Length: 168
Image (cartoon, rainbow, N blue to C red):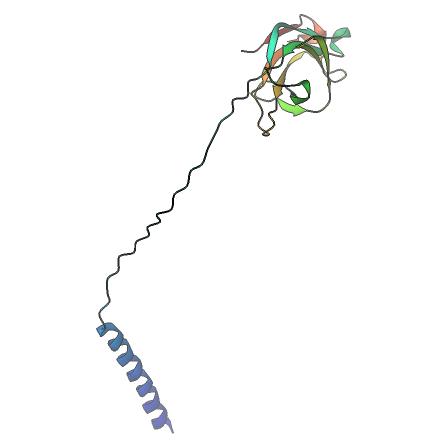
């Protein structure tokens, strides 16, 4: 019985070896693959430049009583073709740290095309002094937004020596 198994196993090995040799003996043909697509298309691309609002210097910082309720006031104009509804607002401890905000500001119309926005700090946020940056941008109907037009203001301890400047 063991002899039969050995012969069967040897046969299987011999058949495998012959199959391997037979496949190696068949020459492989070289192929050059090519893909040529003769279809063409044209696309019209366009770009849009979204100008930022223009801040009108000077801006003002009002620290409130002893710095307890600070605010920064800026006056600004919209770029041509944009409405007040497209304005977006931001605030932060620096220009680089500004984030879009949904509250904490009030915008009024000073005259046709000129707006005033008052950004309010939190209660007691100015007691120890410090600074904040505020910004206004406009959103295009495509969803893209302009760069921020920004100002930075602040004061020393207890609201002493307030300052504000429009950033270039």
